[in-house]
Image: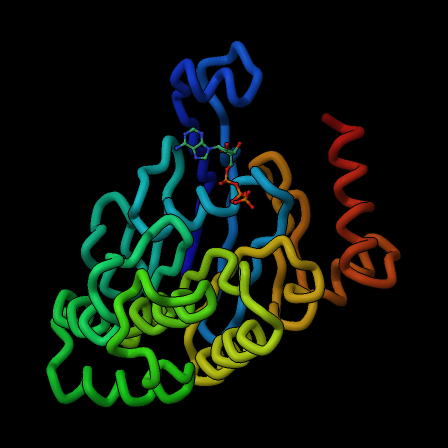
Length: 257
Ligand SMILES: Nc1ncnc2c1ncn2[C@@H]1O[C@H](COP(=O)(O)OP(=O)(O)OP(=O)(O)O)[C@@H](O)[C@H]1O
């Protein structure tokens, strides 16, 4: 289970970042008092526009960055107090983490598996399953720098799942993928859910959230402005699909702000 309690993340901006954001404010509130709970056996989707705070939230859960305020519990372990226990139970996929370009996929998989202390025979079975499912075998011995975007993403997914984590945290997992590869990724996430795992994904693709997620949290300007199943969000807004529901909620939020 993931429990986020009143999470805020405030970044201090340097001069260059202030210029890029065209602001005189030296701080940026990326996540603002956000709470949510996601449970075993569900796919929870964080849906929001660019800059909403999705990646920042996921990076706080994954112990990559520290929350400014609030607490996050991953299977009962608080991210700042027991980061090692948190890292053991999660698989984290993000576009920020680059696989080392000079190594091949097979090596990266073995390396991360060993980092998580996965016994050799178990790791080999995991490799066989993941490499077969994602069609990685044919490029397993190519250097990462030789791979296409899709191949790299498949490799990154397999590596993030090497230790068979209970909780899978994927930031925009289908970003840049063609529809066939994207479908194989979302199908695999459904399979993991059916195995009883908890999956939390971020996306700005409405159709993906609609089809994939059991519950959706809509994030705008770092705040969670709505949450529920697709049916609940449609009921709340009177909309016919998620895109219309999103715009209704987004408009209301902007009018309030
Ligand atoms: N390290 C950082 N330093 C300063 N500001 C940051 C930092 N990381 C993120 N931000 C800012 O925080 C806000 C939220 O960013 P975040 O990447 O979490 O959004 P997102 O919802 O994941 O958007 P996207 O879909 O574009 O990735 C943005 O305004 C971003 O510029």
